[in-house]
Image 1 (cartoon, rainbow, N blue to C red):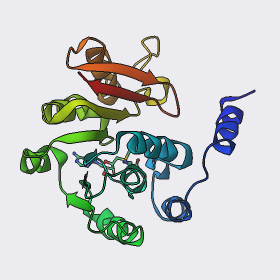
Image 2 (cartoon, helix red, strand yellow; image 1 turned 180 degrees about the vertical axis):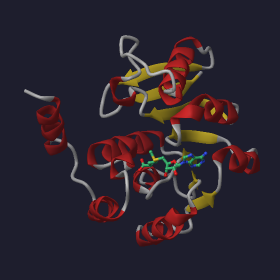
Image 3 (cartoon, rainbow, N blue to C red; image 1 turned 120 degrees about the horizontal axis):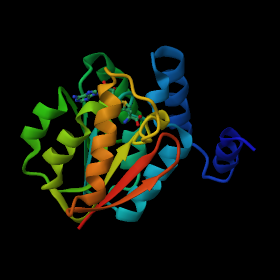
Length: 214
Ligand SMILES: C[S@@+](CC[C@H](N)C(=O)[O-])C[C@H]1O[C@@H](n2cnc3c(N)ncnc32)[C@H](O)[C@@H]1O
């Protein structure tokens, strides 16, 4: 039995992908480079499940891409709740807005186009119940520091790609110029001992690190 078999079985026994998300997934794969960056069916249902359990009033996503995780995370918003998502690439804006509108979320979702390290400075008044860090991996620690003081006690920070294709594991031979992997390893190691959060690494897909704020 391969990992693919297990993932296929998990998909079959997970709630089906909503039709709009399936359409977005197809469009992402047909029209964009690196479509694997999109969250996809199983992980989308996991983010939706977490959001439904938390019923957040305020959600932050760092790294929108085509908006797959955005729509998934928004599914569990409390009445009157709001999601902010930040994407650095302006070429992605029109597609994201089109799908946010098609999901009926134009009022509930604010898309910021810009570098998250700048945009976050304009969101210092917010208190986050749920944060999804999924931008460039070099700056995971920076994004974490920029948001953690605004996460409510008991709030959840989810960080994607913490296994980094297996390269996060210490025995994996590292190239001298592989700064991304070094950053992923350093961030994961820091989270083990950070007194502000309780970590749980889920070895699913490319690895999801759940960090519950103490
Ligand atoms: C892995 S993709 C996000 C996938 C999306 N969260 C999902 O699950 O479908 C990473 C995205 O982060 C964006 N990004 C990279 N650096 C960024 C930065 N400094 N600020 C905001 N977005 C950034 C990239 O342009 C890319 O679209």
